[in-house]
Length: 395
Ligand SMILES: Cc1cc2nc3c(=O)[nH]c(=O)nc-3n(C[C@H](O)[C@H](O)[C@H](O)COP(=O)(O)OP(=O)(O)OC[C@H]3O[C@@H](n4cnc5c(N)ncnc54)[C@H](O)[C@@H]3O)c2cc1C
Image (cartoon, rainbow, N blue to C red):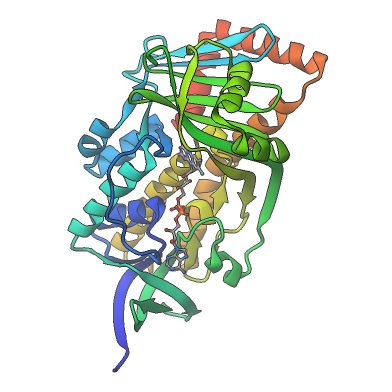
């Protein structure tokens, strides 16, 4: 059988949330793409107690709205109206409230599965996106005028010829390795324990960040429960994963206290190793990295997808502007402008998450006192609180 060849403006490798968001944003700007996703199509989208949750920050809400998807997304979300940050065993706390910040809500919580499904349905309706699944990139060749992707789609070999290839192929990005781009990986020697948890009180749309001696803990209001994330040392995480429910609840409650009520039912626990990935140079001859392939942060700060979405919006706008000016969208001129315009945002988010992971794990009396005084000072200063809220909100 002769090999099939497809031609497109942008080939997006990876149909995770970042790849889908980019293809949708490009289509809205009249740029066509071929979107490749290696995994099989999942058909069961029913919501379950154990679904992993994500925080959508205000900047991402604006992005989804600009794609015309917010009306579909919103019914699946729970708004966050209040955030409470405290330090276990020490005085001082910071509270953020929607009224004080003068916004309708501080953020939204959604099941990752629901958001992915909404994006997939939108991708399938788009004529300018040729979505191939399961389709796996096997190799690629960078030429002067284009990139050629060698793809396995079902049992067929395909060639995709594109002006630009976007590697949205996740943390273990094979594209990043093949390009030999310098990558720094910082391991925190910790894991995040994730599960859902109910309490004997209603959450009242309150989210909590608690700095415990074991590591930061977050409770996110979602439907009739909280999404729970706890960063602990790797060995402790393994113990907590295998502990029986009552032991786990007891230890989590001890760290968190009773501000959200008494912990009742917990769902299936899972764990993620915590690390940060930084890629100083994210493009090379007609190929650029996006999302987790380009930067990965600890889930404790709820920033990974929110940061990626800002990159998607920036790249999509730049490609549109340069295409309209008749400039080759795969050129180094365009990709270097993208990288330069993204650097400050990425560094700010990576540093903010890194501070949360390192500063708050030091359990020294002097550090605890400074930390408590810091929380008191921030809580007393509305302008400072607004600045912090804007940083976390991607504004
Ligand atoms: C526990 C947890 C909680 C989180 N909470 C938040 C939060 O509250 N807010 C937030 O903003 N972010 C959060 N994040 C981060 C967020 O989930 C990620 O940033 C985001 O999902 C990254 O998406 P991605 O598309 O870059 O990567 P991925 O989701 O990994 O997608 C990559 C895709 O590429 C495909 N692929 C790989 N190789 C190939 C190939 N050769 N050919 C074709 N396809 C390929 C894979 O199959 C995969 O589907 C959280 C993460 C975790 C783990």
